[in-house]
Image 1 (cartoon, rainbow, N blue to C red):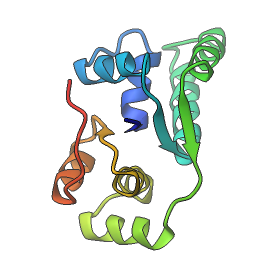
Image 2 (image 1 turned 120 degrees about the vertical axis):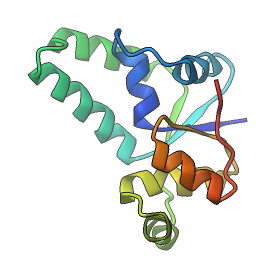
Image 3 (image 1 turned 90 degrees about the vertical axis):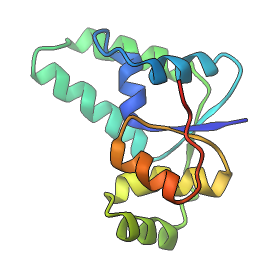
Amino acid sequence: MPFVVDASVTICWLLPDEVEPLADHAYERLAGDEAVVPWIWWFEVRNVLISNERRGRIDAATTDRVLSVLRRHPIRLDAAADEAAVVALARRHRLTVYDAAYLELSRRLGSPLATLDTALAHAARAEKVSLLTG
């Protein structure tokens, strides 16, 4: 069954000093399963990598390498967000619209959500969306 993965989990896959059991579990699932992400994920992941370059935590070659590796994984970008549902979820749970997009996608697909974001996980539980656990 496909699962939804947010940027907080994805970044743990990409940065060598980020260690989180849930992220490891989600990464292992990619061996036989597909991850689905809203379009905002594409920008979030790249923004975090560029921010880490600017801080000197990684270099441009590392960014290029991890993006190349990431492209080889079964991660599908979903562009069919329900705008009204995203906005309603953001309002109801005081989430950013970005985080609400992950929640809306999980709810719409009936897929578990992999996140390290506490507020997003709380909102998912309130919406009866299952969470991937490590």
